[in-house]
Image: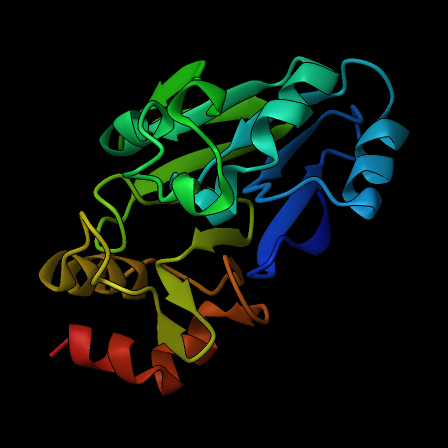
Length: 211
């Protein structure tokens, strides 16, 4: 599994192109914008190799590159059922801040639930529902990697004061991540990557969640 990291859009969202090095098939996680570098990387995969656009949640800074990428590749858009309505209402996704109307939002092709899996080549992404930042926030677990969106950051966690956010749910989600077996590389929705073991030891929010 190869992970290419891009920081895209005005909020430098962590976007990840995850490629199965055996089949060459790939998924992109949270394309908040389609930067030139991301576009080149996707095109370099070859035709019909990008299979999925995986959304950890549906806030504007994680979705504004989705429509163009789907139009370019035919990749399927996957989102948790709890955030499905955000892809039909630009006010809920806060896309209106960028002048995006509801009819310009990407419609989902795959509706996810906790525990679902998505196969891309030899890779399997497991869906872990981690509400708190939004009702349908998820983490994707693939091999020894977690794509944590705006649930878990290096030394932090996602905001809970946007519509649909809930601090109690966020604490339960952080506890759920803490209790996973083993260590993982964590690729968050913003800022630097980290490891789950490091966050278990040092992240004050995660420490509070297990009390």
